[in-house]
Every structure is written in C-alpha cells, then in structure tokens.
Length: 364
Image (cartoon, rainbow, N blue to C red; front, side, top):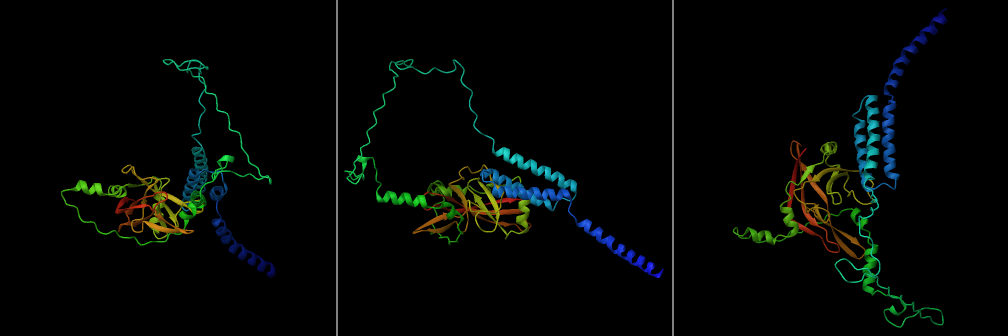
C-alpha cells in the first residue's frame, strides 16, 4: 500500500512539471502561415539569383518586393496577417513579371484593297512626272583574283593587299581598336574608389556688379546647370521604410546617383551598387524633379567634395566621376540634406566637373 501511494505521488509530480513545459514549447512554435510566408521570400530570392532570363528592370522590381516582404516579417502578428501577406506577395511577383513583359510589338493588319498605291511596274511613270521607274541593272560582281605561289600561298602586288581582296589596317588603328576591345568598363565602375583630393581652382577676379550677363556667359555648361540645381530631389513614393533604416544607422548605408534610372539609390556598404559584379541590394530613395531636364546619362550628380577618382588600366590612367552623394540629417531628423556637384562624362577624355556645388533639402 505504501509503495503504491509513493508511485502515485511521483507520477503526479512529473505531470505537474511536464504540463507547463509543453505549454511553453507550443507557444514558441511558428504558425504554418508564417512558415509559408518565409518560404515565399526564400523562393523569390533564389529565383532572383538563379534566373538568367530576367530583364534588369524586372530583377530590380523583384528585389524591391523581397526587401519589403522582409520588413513585414517583424510587423505581422497573427496567422491571418501572414496568410494575407503571402497572397499579396504572390500577386506582386506575378504583376512585376507580367508588367515588364508588356510592350511587345504588334504586327499591323494587312492593308485593304485600295488603301495604298499598288507597286509600279517597270516602265510606268509616276503621276506628275515623265521619268521611267525601271530598276537599274545591278553591276556585275568583280571576279575574285587570287595569286597563288608555287607553295599554294596567296601573295599580293600592292602594299594595301586590295588586289587580292585583303585590307590591312595600319598599326595605330589596330592598337586603338584592341585597346577599346579589351577595356573592361564594368571592372572600372566596380573598382574600389580611391579618394583624390580636389584641386581647388584659383580664385577668379570678381566681375563688375553692373555686368551680370557677362558673368553667366563665362560659366561652363556644368556650372550653369549646378547654379540652378537647388532642391531638385523629391522623396520616392515607396521609400518611407528605407528612410527609417537610414535614420536608424546612417553609417551603415551610402547614397549613389544611378545615371540609368535618374534616381538616388541606397545600398549597404561603401561599394558602388552598379555593374554585373554587384551582388548586394539597393533601394530607390529619391527622384529627380522636372526642375532640371539636362541631368541624365552624361550629365550626372557627383560627390561635392571628391568628385573624381583615378583608375589605372594597363599603362593608361583614367579619371572617373564619383557618383556617391554626401548627406546629413538636421538636429531633429525631420529633414535630410544632400550635397552634390554636376559632372559630365566625355568618352575618351577627362570628365568636366562644376566649380559650383548645390544641395537639396527633403522633408522626411
């Protein structure tokens, strides 16, 4: 009897301890809906990395969708929220793919009888004219002239080789062609930027106050654009979450001018987020307003303090524009200020850089 009572007491103690442990473990288990949401994000990221047929604009749109979904993970609470978010994520992915595939050329319908003038026959005259439209007889093709030596090797009588159908380029042309063919533009863009101290131009004499028109005429193209580039940036419509990340840790991210999309983008780290070798994420933050139309591909926003950097390629040295944009917040972090100069890319020559600098203040 005593042994049975002791066994019952021990079993009761084990049950008392086990019940709260099971309750805790069940509380920590992720819901099925949350797991499905995570799996959709993982599947999307894998597709972005492995799908080779995606267009550049489609890939950028999908990267933005994946980034937004990650931000939602910590905000959603209930299984219903995750279920709804999963459906919206699938819908956004499908829309992004379909939207970027639109715009394929449509074959025009065949012309109806009488819609256009029928083709003229040889010998017919054009209305209002008297000349025949008979097609010209093509000139006979010149015969291939081959000079063959006793060893069955072609040789030529002229220095140019034209007599046997060969055209030899001079040494200078061949060297120039090989240089541009072997030049790796992507490597230059993605190379670590080495800051070069800006060479300050000598102070120009102040023009007379009564001749402002002459002063404007003496300005270069980039300085004229820089002078009217005050407050030309506006906050992107989907950039609020990314702005919060930047406000939380402004040392972790950098801002860059994207010349292809005419936007200011944000990326993690200090390397430029462009070229096929870039593997990170980037987010669109600011758009150009319609205030200045000249800024685009060749005319660019560049760094206000270190606008250029040099790259050594073989025995040649290139000067490139630095499109990294400096920024700061005001004391209350209610506004962000971006500073920049204006640069112009010139193929085969050193770029032009404005002496003037300007800024945009955007309310966030």
